[in-house]
Length: 376
Image 1 (cartoon, helix red, strand yellow):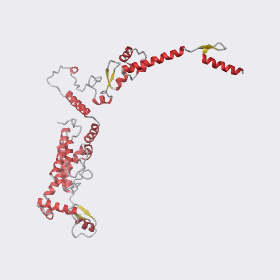
Image 2: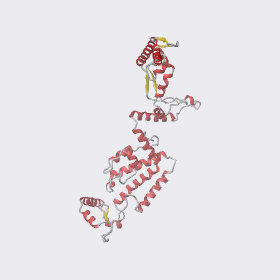
Image 3: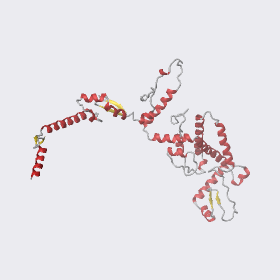
Image 4: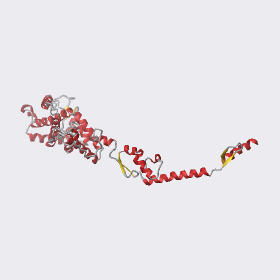
């Protein structure tokens, strides 16, 4: 029912529709993360598609695909709600807004009459643009942009066989009906996106999080999700007499077990760095998973016994040392320093001062010098 990216209805999966969006002519190229914020915006600055270019089959197919996906996603995630009534209200609201000429981006502009007094707004139906100055409007009529827009408008009128002067008499033209169909799809996308704002926000957070992960971490997370779904799925063919304690725990990622005998969550596994290996040669190349277990093992019996096997008695000085060669080198230096200190202590000559006190020779001589200086 759901794709892997949707995570059982928690997130949107708009990757395919995003590719369709990037193939539209005249659009602003957005990343997938930016597209999640702007897929329901059909006006500048996010969507620079002109009104005439929106009447193409390519654009209509894109908007229809986006609207159908959002509607399908809502039906799959909210099966108990009366969605038909909700969608009918969308249609009623759009019909009212269309009749009132209040649909943003699709309002029908009425051209100003030819006998309008000077100073009124002058409308250019070819370029769909307003002018407040008659001289500016006259200069605009000779421009290349206006000429191209006028030729394109004539071509569209020739294609539909309608004349704008007969529109009021014949009713809505074929072009206007097509505009209404596209505007209906855009309006529904906006309403559906607003109704699922929480899923949209969660999707954006999930995409940001996954962009900071490696491909291996993404695959491990996906395997954990499927493993969780497989373990919670009902198993048929078992008798009711089977106890809960006999259930087989599915743990493909070899995650450590919690106090309840079930694997710990994958996010907790990553938080404590339990996937990082620390090897200790003194402990017989034993591998400790995670920094916490590695720091703790220096005070454990296994590590202390390995140091004693090397002839090392003072274990407190050998923290963070895991190689046998480094430990032996440090112990040799410590023993040499101890022997040197003993030799220096044995070579000290002791003397007795005038008061009968025993002290090293250098202190005794300095004391005698002080006495002689005092007598003088």
